[in-house]
Amino acid sequence: MEVVSGVLYSMEERIRTKLIKAGATSQAKAVTAQEARLDMQEENWIHYIAGGLFAQVKKTAANLYYVSIYN
Image 1 (cartoon, rainbow, N blue to C red):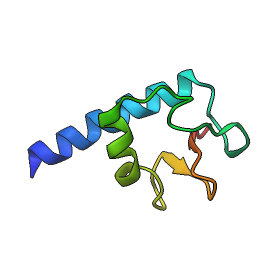
Image 2: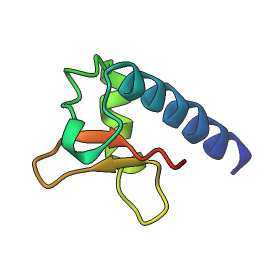
Image 3: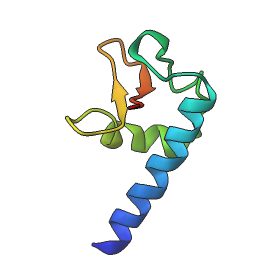
């Protein structure tokens, strides 16, 4: 179980970093996985990571992604 959660955490951090670098920090600035330059492995994981009530990576109805940043 610890291995899975470690992989999940590291993958989420990789995706978050790329979304922030792409400027996707709000729903209005959301980007596609290709615009964020996610690799194949990250694109496969983003469906598990994005969404959810407390997730930091969010998904819009149009399949765009952004990072929810709280101040």
